[in-house]
Length: 74
Image (cartoon, rainbow, N blue to C red):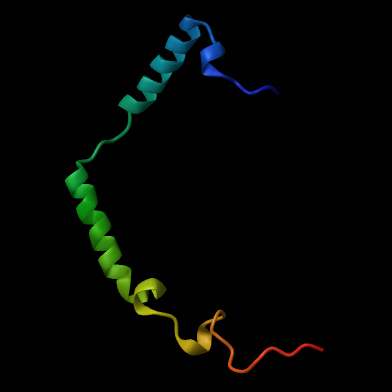
């Protein structure tokens, strides 16, 4: 199945697609950015104690820790 290129469609088809997209978008529930930012910040702060990028990984559970000793070639 060939790829669909918008620029290859007739103008009428482009407008139909745009109207369909606008109909979908008008149904979306909108929220204020300031409220969403607060919710995201709160979510991050609540879970920061569990975040290995903030807290760190315990040495005994770190699969990427540096091994002591040298390389052995056999």
